[in-house]
Image (cartoon, rainbow, N blue to C red; front, side, top):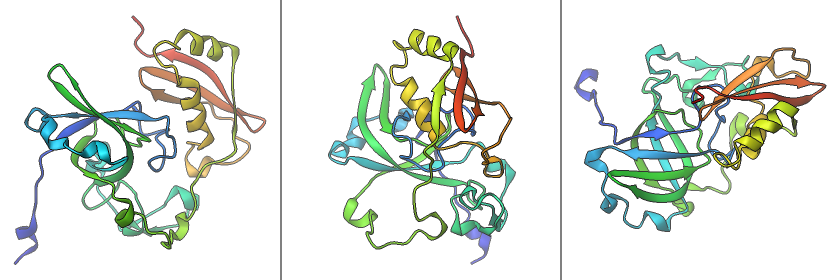
Length: 242
């Protein structure tokens, strides 16, 4: 058989609703920011509670999805993982880079339950690391005895990333946190958890950095910068205020 005989196609079963509206600031792996919560909106043909029967007995699940934001950029045999400072190359199959021959992603997420909302069926998840609008290919239960291997080794990613970065909020940011508390009660914790992961590109991860950064979460734009090794949130503004 020729290679073309193995060409496959799949139908998305739903779409991700995520607080992450752009690639920047998305955690580099799932569950690094547990405050990051999202939903999977099931498409009509798959929006039946029967398809999720007994899923509530599993605390976590596997989400398989299509890297729609980078799929058209193609792939290369080697990539430069952030964990190696973005300077050392490894094989694409030794990484979780989105730039793959088949742009398929895999995340283990916390199962927060299925909810029926009028005609919509949504699956709520925690610890999400997926871009808003991402097409979902499949959902599977996480099975601890099979999916967790105690003596496994993690190569160049043996331990979880993250820093002990101190995070502070300016007076203007504090004011906005207070005004948004009814809509986003955990916004402070969410922003803090993201900044402690240091979302900057690997090559910019140095103590002295004069660049001012922006990130989009929900319908908000957050500006921040490093000041004497402290990540200071300068402002929080609504992108589309009424």
